[in-house]
Length: 337
Image (cartoon, rainbow, N blue to C red; front, top):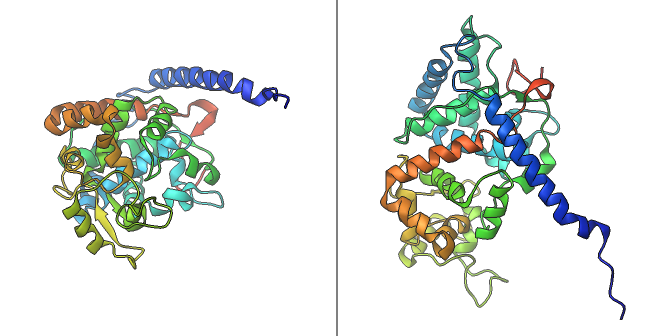
């Protein structure tokens, strides 16, 4: 049989990947140059105080806004970059597709309130982007739930389009293994250590039963009558089966950090050490030897986790930043001007 010649597409693939990596590195450098911690010093000097006030008020009403806002920032940056496109409503909106369908209404309301508070200030009206407000709010929910307070780089513009079709392929899946996680995060300029640190945001997160039920019961195709994913602590498994029976409600959920679910700390990594990670994509960070040492380090040293988290959030915040004619400052976060 004659051997097939490699297609032009397959031979070009490595070149395309390499070119994409170079473009990403260049874009990240350009984004860092465009952003500044003092970006609004003269145009809206009270922006951080105004956003923080809105965050404080919302968290007094419901804690759900804390993990929801952090997740909203992650999902925004991973899809088309940190441009608040996740907030857009319309026929092609991102929050009606894939994992974005479970984004928190409380988080969306928090950003709406923060935008209103900023624009109510005469000096700030229509001068601060929704993307920057989201970045500040993500920092504030972390610090107000016990996590680190850090300076946020500002100067992002809001994107003019949302693309529902790319959501599913841009976000990590609940069943991802380490290679899949590293590949997706690397596509956004993030290292394995960054990925493990950002996963620590699950210390205040929740997840619905449908995202981990296959880890609780042996389903057809799971193999050898075993449930899917890394092993789980047997006692914890029995607890979760009570939370998520086979006939679970679509609204049923569990805390990703069952020990200190309302405190931003390193408890998430300690649950992984105890084999109590709900998502396979969480537990794999400990079960895979290539990432276990970092999990152990963060579990034993909260300061190290906080430092790594802050560094990773800064890098994440530079992904896909819109400048010039590529973006705008939306008057309303849910629609383009």
